[in-house]
Length: 223
Image (cartoon, rainbow, N blue to C red; front, side):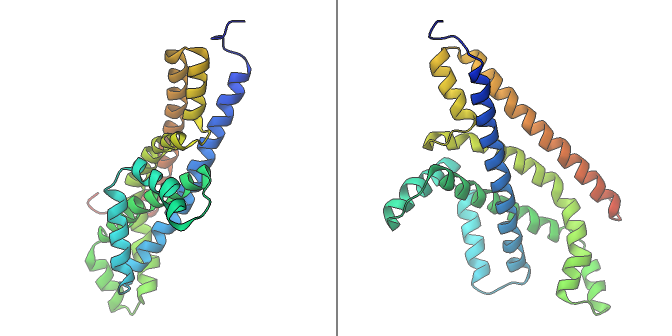
């Protein structure tokens, strides 16, 4: 066997890398959306000071490279606070916060897109802010937000490829290992690219179905 030959075990390695990518993407999506939802509640209720802090953090995360954020979390925080930080934890924290920053803007825009007249009418009927948020704003904001949110998540799926630089054995890291061992970059990176493409298409398809159902459940005017 030549040094550059592929082996059946390479498929196992790719499957393991794919599993790490999917697992980390799922984790960071759930955590990021939860944080974004909390940010949105703080913004909606206009909590003093905390609201300004959240907006500042969100702006900083949106307007700086993810790779820089990753290095800051993995190399900077442990050095400054004298703590241990594994590559997976650093990657999870960085991508979760980055997802939260962009999702917060999407959620807030979705709420702002609901006509002010509907909110005013709900207030006239004596509904509380929570009731207005739950029954008037959230159903429509969800339908407004799902399209941009799916686009964001597809992008964040691609962003996960950056975590390979700090030693996380995701799909990109495994691809790099196979490339160095087989010396077949065209084949290796074509396969890796197709796997990312398949994941992105699956995510977009699921998002389209969810959006279709949401739009059916909400009365739309002028859309």
